[in-house]
Image (cartoon, rainbow, N blue to C red; front, side):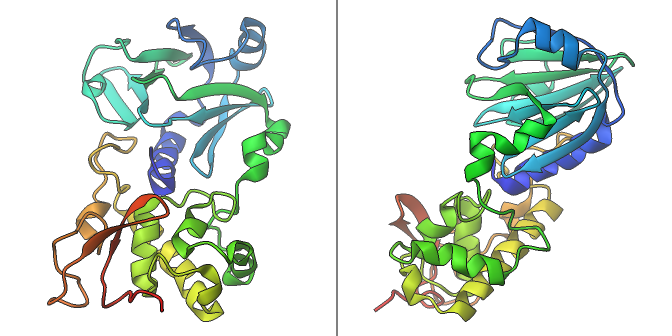
Length: 293
């Protein structure tokens, strides 16, 4: 599944590509699960509507329409959005031969047609992803939106808000706490490992054992590594590409994630270890991140 920087990278690309376009029609390819919208809603709120904005909340894309509705889109594990315009093609999501195949193909679940002749294809090999129309004013009231935590990259989200939120999980490991989407939105395994290494905190440390100063440093390190990932086009270079079909390059710059057996950037005589914390494979430097007493 993509993490927040991957979805943000795709969002930025789509904002450049589809904002201002008007939807003229659509076709569903026998997949009501992927596009669970009634014919009446599609005809009234999708057809004839222009794309006014492309936003993101946690790992969910929000395509706002002039009709007052939003196409809430979750790529899940294998979702793709591909735009075909004349002889050009742009895509974002799980890389597969669909980026070069004639579309629709056997992974296509929905197609949106624009008045300028371009088309948006929503592909999903495993059919876990979806695109669903909601009244824009109701989007904040969706159950997921009510539960998900603050956006870590918002300038207004600071340690002053973060520390009380994570201390609600004082009895859990710090890694489990930052993976909890109700504490922070969109932080997954890669950014948890990288942020904890940056802050020199062992992932198995209980939150109550981490000082406020160290938690503030952790939040800053998570922000830094996410921003670097977005700058590099996303992190999941084996699974995700951006809206122009380029693979993310962040993992080439990772300090610990997937670097087990390699040396720590801070301690060239120490090898990165892979352990298990919070049910996830976890990468650490035993010197940077000593085991809590």
